[in-house]
Image (cartoon, rainbow, N blue to C red; front, side):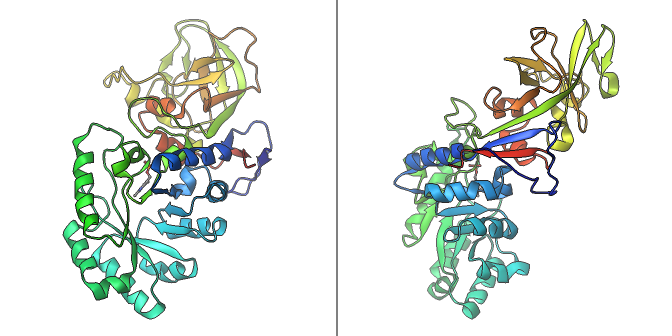
Length: 393
Ligand SMILES: *Cc1c(COP(=O)(O)O)cnc(C)c1O
């Protein structure tokens, strides 16, 4: 069943065929989770649904993951945790960005579990628990990324003080891998050793280290709980090799107009795309206001300027009528021009939809052409897309 939805951010339901559209296959999300759960076994598998489920929508992905058997969710903020709680009443929901002193009542009310990353946060939680009962928390340890987390010695001192530890009620200790997307990177082994040494002294706590890429580094990285994000949504987590995950999102946009241009004419702002032949141009209704990155411009931006010369960057394209159509000149706010000259005459008509990424054009190939990663493309998907959900069962 396909379900058309009013835009969740603006409440505007754009039913016109001129709106770009996203098709979100939540069945594929559930299937990806089950695949990762098999790889992680005997460790349990959580789901990272921060940034509104990597752009797919917490309201769409949490229910299917919950039904698939996922009992642990990670989000970044309290607001995301509250949103996830609506769809997973009995799950554990961890707040990765830690304790927000302004939102203390929300942790209790929605049974959210803070991931404590500093000593002041630990003191605050212990004090909170002395007045409100022993609510669980998680402890994050930094093993080399220098992002969030206690140092190893801070964490040892904290959890070694029995009285304080009882008050804290830490149910999980976790750390995060910096280089798991590169299996040969020496940092993986270093972080593994540091985390193993720590968890050996804390046998009563569950431990968690691996993101999507970490799951593929081997069973010693799984500990008790894995935390995949991008792989659930079909994105590439490792720098090289096959991506075994199923794509979950197809982004399409309509051709608003087809025009014919002559050699010597130019396309888009800055007149940076200069045509060297008779060219058929399709004007596509998507732009950077939709999160379609301006760095996908075919010309006229620093990434593709004469002084940069990133010759190995893939050429930015869309997919239409069984072929690729290169992007001409700059991506604009609402519109993007593509070259359809080489597609069979009559194969492309006004009103047809081009694929921006999806089953024919991999998310990560588009991201690479934009000089970024699939994570950024998904989490930037704009509010104007008309969203349809498939595979909900
Ligand atoms: C985002 C995040 C994850 C998930 O990472 P992916 O690479 O998307 O699998 C796991 N753990 C932490 C702490 C994170 O911030």
